[in-house]
Image 1 (cartoon, rainbow, N blue to C red):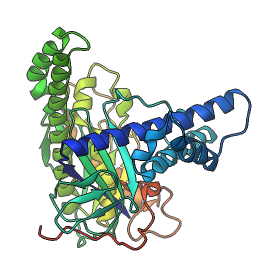
Image 2: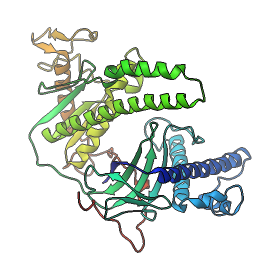
Image 3: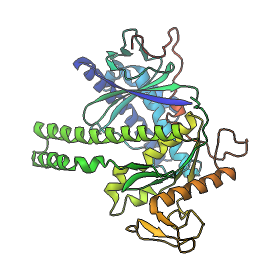
Length: 415
């Protein structure tokens, strides 16, 4: 399976200028190729092939006076930008034909230099890991990296990203073998909520940290300062970066919380079952801010890929399943209840239920039924059991070609 490993990079002034130029050149190639395909479509001409665009917008463009500066960056950056455009079109066409699950994907759009996120992608022909702990990027130099952990294998692809607050990150795609954990007898059903972030079927509760709510006071003050600055001024740019940094802190804290909670649940349970919530619909209600602050979708995705990596069973219970209406003791359906009802008594067996704990137990029972019916993929399932393949974090198209004459290494010596 493919995994992504992100590390913070600290380029110097010259390297920041080189990266800014690389971001701009990749953006120009994307926009030029996208414009050619849109004009051909409007004129009723056939779809322009990638080989023709590569020859016209990269190779020949470097020899012109208007695009001569494309030669100042690595050719791999430009080629990968064209490959990313091909992937965007493929996703769009697959969505139109019904081959792609999930939401409908729109056609590719033009990129702007004012976008909050800039990135370039490289294969192993344009980067390598150095013995001194730096990462060499073609036409940029040796980037200083903060290595938080070793790479488990030689990377096949590298994405250099600059976020909205000016931080730089290196994202490595690595092919690794699954890390199977020892088998356990425990299974967990999870009910996600707002008052408590998650309630497990064994009674454990994970409190909701509410990172955005805790940072609202400071964000409000910073946003007011930003609104008072004149548009286009340097002070407004400084105030915008302050707001972006505060939002980045909130996102980093939430992501760290999700990783720790999901890892602990996967390590403690052989099978994990969770309700498939309609987050996009809940995000349009009066609870939208709290729903987005919780980040349920990201948490469920982490549970899903970590279950695949560590050999655990994972299944989603349909959102229409009445987990809060059924008594987990006798199975009697007691009907819908408003959100303010946190405890209720079963009218048949008289059991007093905590709303969230009862829902988690029902999710556990329904998840077991789904697995027993062969509708979820398990480590020891038959060939006909798994009907949906779990996606891994890194996309297959991001794998690069082997570097000729020089091989990258796994990990960094001296860590």
